[in-house]
Length: 188
Length: 135
Image (cartoon, rainbow over all chains, first blue to last red; front, side, top):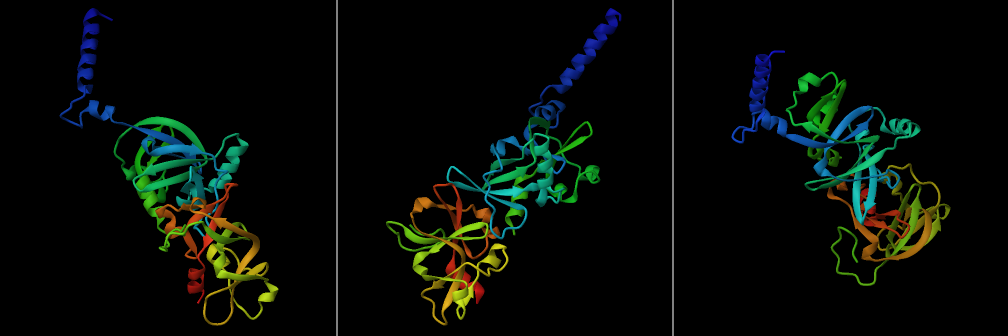
């Protein structure tokens, strides 16, 4: 590689870096878009991968301490009592009409994995969400959702609650709109 | 103490409750509303109210029946499944239910629950509502 090419290459890199710099006046600048990331708690339900904004997650507990709610619809798994606070727990698999999360949970326990209840707090809601397995925290770029692109891969009911989709290899991960999800779950 | 959602004057010293088990669920009813306990077979001739269908359970055909006080008309009983005994409950025994669950609670239960020393959740039967809903 000649000195001239190196110089050109660096010059090009500098130009690209300049384009990436954060433009405080323009939120659509590439730098601004790259900087806008969302911290997400990832988990699995019925074979699908979901996420919740980590800022809404209060804690993660086991599922053994749940008490069934008499006469409740099947998507309400029960209640948990945490430090004298009653928390209603939603069975996300049943609510989204995914593969039975209980059979998934059985498979998970055979594989040495454990189902969990993710306790979330958002606005007027303090609630638990029953999941088959918690994967961990990730950072996703905040991009807009074009639901048409994913219509084949993501169930209709799930599409109603997705606020962002993150693709990683073959995996599609759906960030859930927690407020909308709990608004609907609260209506019998 | 007052039951959640009820606007009575402040109660000092607690409320006596009758604790019972209706299949998977543990419940209480205010003791002052029950005058005596009969077996299911002894309740022939009574108008017997059954909370079970309101709790998503099949109708009760055995166990204990509580004779209900303070309602006019023919003698009335309430299916209690297996009666465990009486307890005194204070306000610390009770927890409020989150608002978003209210619509998912059967109307014959009060919008709260009890929580005992063994960390068991106990549901509060609203006998007035059961009478209303069964008529």
